Image (spheres, rainbow, N blue to C red):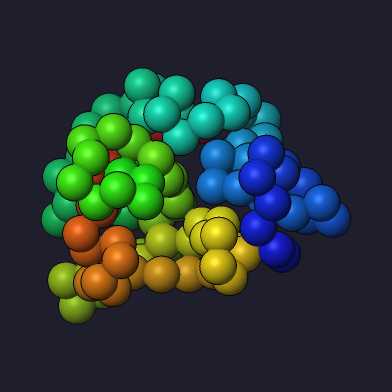
Length: 115
């Protein structure tokens, strides 16, 4: 599915928060429409305790910022890497991991939101 700013459907494309909202909506859970607002919910989880379904947050394009600008959904943790599915600007909905240079520099925290 391609990236589209403000997108929240498989046909129209997704941005990161639209993708999270779509997935959580399948479980009857409504989350806010921005990564920063989503980050205000849930319980902080240590990186080593991240599990599938947790939300992982990153800064946006500015890696020096401490402001949330991107969100993904953890799919697994393996070999010290957290894998997550998200809507990326360059490639649409993909799975990435926290050891990729782009995300490693921007990693902020993980949160668990009850469904």
